[in-house]
Length: 256
Image 1: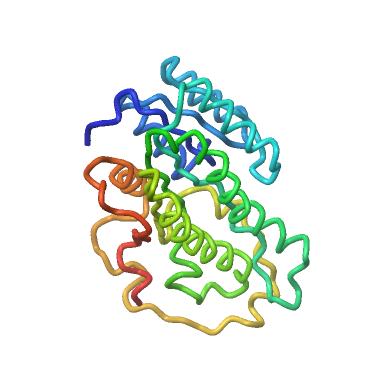
Image 2: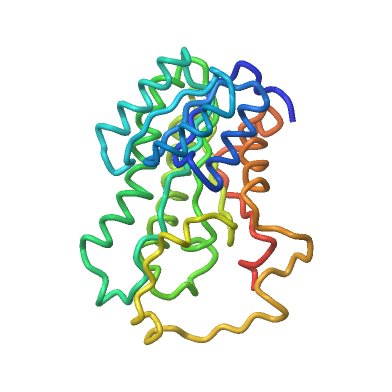
């Protein structure tokens, strides 16, 4: 895929997983890329691996003013913004609704959904003049899949991202800003290592048995690079008439 040379890109949650894979592909294709993440060491490693076309801002996306400022700083450093990949997120705490604390709910909603709003809010004034593409990382959970018991906060945040993207796609179409959503299934990233699954989840689970494994597509799937390919496609001129759409990338697992 070509056409990203001289493009200005910002990726949130860029230090690992889908965000890192996406950032690296944009960098390799000649784009200037601004990286946002909480983990400074990982961002520094990415920057050191590539050229001066990489800019970094270390910020927790739940820090409203910090996130707004980081996006503005990166856009200023690159001389504008053409593509925004809103990718930062957590699984949070998986537990029954009656056991889920308000703080646990707020942490997931603020990290996933509120930061999506803030990221787009900060990008719009910069992108209005020349248009561009916004791609939001949601999930099959909350949109096609509701069998991850205990994930009520996570699924709600992911469903909210899809609704927000559709509203934004209509509102921003007059500025030629396209807004789309990707909905990955199980992807090999480190997000599961940061998930707090409470033992009480076992009390509310309804057993689900999948035939011959959970992923129907026999070709190996579920790696961050495949998701990055989709982000680049949706950000390219080849997807110039696609906006307000969620695209599932899960090897058909969410159809079971």
